[in-house]
Image 1 (tube, rainbow, N blue to C red):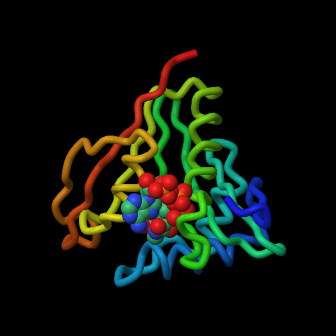
Image 2: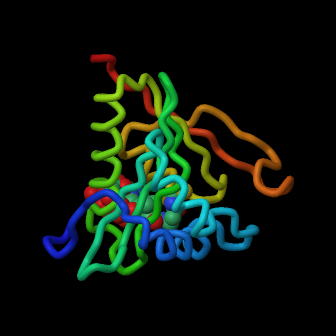
Length: 154
Ligand SMILES: CC(C)(COP(=O)(O)OP(=O)(O)OC[C@H]1O[C@@H](n2cnc3c(N)ncnc32)[C@H](O)[C@@H]1OP(=O)(O)O)[C@@H](O)C(=O)NCCC(=O)NCCS
């Protein structure tokens, strides 16, 4: 990742930026479900981790993961188009994988839109494998791919 960007926990006032990025970069063409208030709730939830990469105080990438007892679910992850292929996504995932290991998580699960070849390649490069298909997962129409990453137990 560029030296100009730093990683940290999201702050409540960044929920608006994160929600807008989710709407435009992840949920495009679907109903906007990750609104600012929903993102803010996760920032304040002790069972969730919302992390961001910032450049000049602006959020340029983010991830939102919810921790259960033994599995975690990655709900959102996106990088501003101008910052892609500069390892922002990799750095976010390395943070999440490290925190999941410390928390004793056995597996991280996620869904993505089945036609999202870039994200599939990105997740595969970080050790995720495809575990299945969920037809009509998004709004009863669009198919999701499910992927997961098993973690070594400490
Ligand atoms: C998927 C996404 C998060 C990747 O972020 P990124 O910061 O560009 O990823 P990185 O630079 O860390 O790439 C890490 C590795 O992933 C793979 N990768 C990333 N983008 C890729 C692409 N478009 N095509 C193929 N492989 C890709 C590569 O192996 C890459 O390593 P390399 O650059 O050394 O070849 C980004 O493209 C994005 O925000 N997409 C839109 C939102 C989205 O689809 N989110 C995921 C579903 S919720």
